[in-house]
Amino acid sequence: MDDATLTFNRHRPRLQGIAYRMLGSVAEAEEVVQDAWLRWHEAAKDAFDSAEAWLVTVVTRLSIDRLRAAKVQREHYIGAWMPEPTLTGAPHSPSTPEQLLERADNISVAFLAVLERLAPEARAAFLLREVFDADYDEVARTLGKSEAACRQLVHRAKAQVQEGRPRFSVPRETHERLLRAFADAAARGSLHELKALMAEDAELIGDGGGKVPTFGKSLHGSQRVAQLYFALWRRMGPAVRMEIVDINGEPGMLRFLGGELESAQTFEIEDGRIVRIRAQRNPDKLARIAQLFSSK
Image (cartoon, rainbow, N blue to C red; front, top):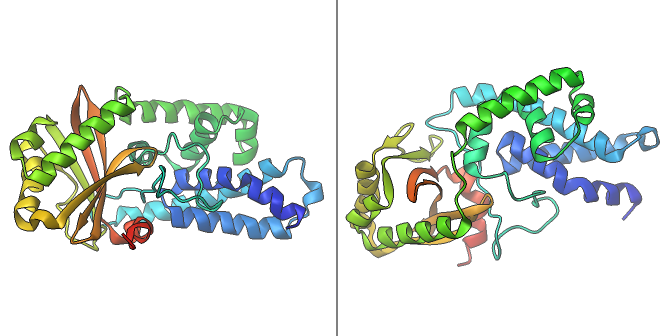
């Protein structure tokens, strides 16, 4: 392996991490990184002060261009758009350089959903500064803006992100314990227990992408959400199986119907109750996870 390839592979997890957080899609992130590799292969590397800075700039700008195009597409997306989930915990998490994400924190589905509120350049500035610890001069060079402009971008983005993020962080053991109780109640068809584990105004958001039936933007109220899980148990019984895994850096649940992956679900918790469930049901976005479990 030559020096150029070794250098690129050393930085690949960081590049993949930036692109995934920008785009919310593992496949698109890999395409951006591959495009950066082609440009790197053809570039005059002796002219670079820093290979990492050059690569980060290329990936960031390619991601901004893709995100601008994606914003238009997502305006016409059928139902609620949610990012493609990725497994981040052993034993099923990917381990190849192309699939690794630098720093598994700050990639929760809830966090990526909040990032969707930001304009592409604001999203890039915020991620580079707040997640990847870049100095403002680095952010400015990457985006081709002044440091003052980048500080303003990050300041406004932080306010928007703070407004949309969960109010309190939940200890991992609490999150996992509540999730296991919810999965157990769903497996037994206990309507009462399901409802008791959720806040009264709990919300369920589903992404079917027009590929599978869904219930629109969201479903509100613990009674309605609990009834949905109960109805599935009444209809499918033992054909429903839940598995607790790490999804985007935190405990989540995969639901299988008749042995086939039907959804990847993540949960937001406040005051000891589930306040929001995000159910990714679009088969295109589940394909990578489904492949990992296809032999089970």
